[in-house]
Image (cartoon, rainbow, N blue to C red):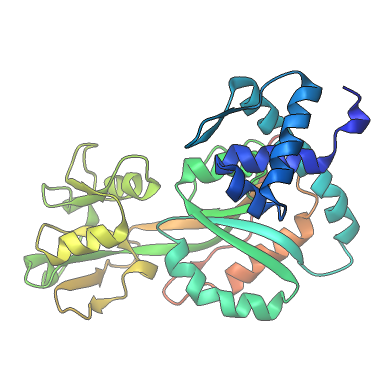
Length: 312
C-alpha cells in the first residue's frame, strides 16, 4: 500500500471503532454515516491485507493486529494534532480542544467550583472532561487520548511534566453518634482499627488513607466510591478519611455524618496538573496550571509551582 493512499481520516475511523466497539457509535463520533465508515474500514483492510476487526451481530472487537494498528494510529493522530497546536501556540491564550482528566475522588468536587471562571478566562477553549483512576488516566495521557490530568502524586514522571497546584487536607468523617464526633483530639495514626472504611484497591486515596492511619493493607471494609463510603458512614458502619472538597466541615444535611478537621499538619494529599513533556503547548498548559493554583478552592493550600520534567 502506498503511504499516500492512507489518510488521517482513515486513522480516525480505526481509532473510533477500536474505542467504541460499535460501528454506529464510531460513525456518530466521526460525524459520518455508518455505511460510509464501514465501507472505508473494509477498503483499508483490503489495502493493508489484514483484518482489523472481528464483526458479529452484537459486537465489534479489534483483532490483535487491529489493536496494534489502532495504537499506532493514535500516535500518528497525536503527532498530526501538534501541527495545529504549533500554529496556534503563541497566537492566542489557551484555546482549541483540550481533553482534561481527573481522578474520580477529585473531579466531581473540583470541577463545579472552577468551570464558570474557566469559561470566562478561556472563552475559546473547547474543554472535554473525563474521570478515572490514576493508572487509567496516565495510560490515556501517554497514549494521547488525554491532554492533561489532575491527580495526586507521587507518580512515575518519566516523559511527563508534573506541576503542583494545591494541597487538599483530609477530614475525619464519622457517624454523628460516634465517640470520635466528640473526641477533643484527633490523631490520624490512631484510626487504623476495624472501623476504618476504605476505597477498594487500585485507588490512590486508599493508599493515602492507609499511610495516614498507619493501617495494614487489609484494614477496614471497602467501597467503590466516596459516595458509597459516605453512605456506609451514615449507616453507622464505621469512619473514613474524606478529601475536604468532598466533605464540607461539620454535620451533613442528613444529620447522620460529622466531618472534622485534623490539627494543623494533619493528613493531606497534593494535587498536580500533569501533561506530556513533549506537548508543544507547554506555555499554555503552565497558564492552565496557574489558573487552578490561583483558584484553589477554599480550605485547600496553594502550592508553589515547581514543574519537573523527566525523559522525553
